Length: 178
Image 1 (cartoon, one colour):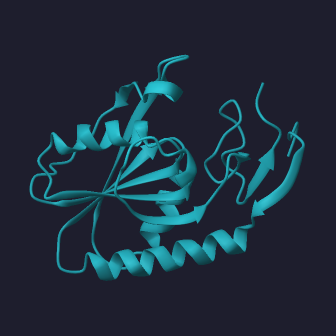
Image 2 (tube, helix red, strand yellow):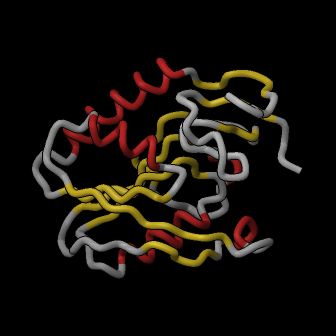
Image 3 (cartoon, helix red, strand yellow):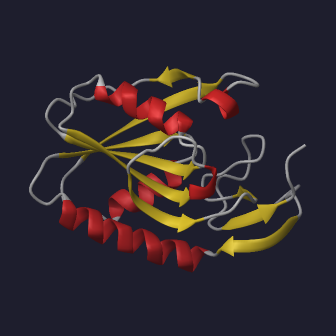
């Protein structure tokens, strides 16, 4: 890839991600087999994960996305974000599965869950590809996660570097952003 940043190592290769996504899809399919399910992906990071995951769930479901923008120098400490793309579906009395690319502090995810709860769903569960429980600042109910991670800076499969390289089919560790 042109101008690809140097990376330390491949953390999760394409085959490992594909296998784990299939496992999660089968589990989600079984867990929600008797109820209407709406899957909401958090733009833009979760788009690849959500796309692959929903294809691994062999049942009908509704799909939407929610987008947010960070408030510079505040979001990482407070979780304060602004919604840039809202939900268009009716969520009343339906089970909602919020799809994240990565949960670190949990602050942004907790805010998004509170926004979704305003739509009156039966329940809101969280599924994230990557999860760092050591950085969690607020308890949030993560029902499913793909892989546990540390504080490394990661890139690929939805994770970006200045909005680039999300399209890599694997995840690499890069040097910390400056």
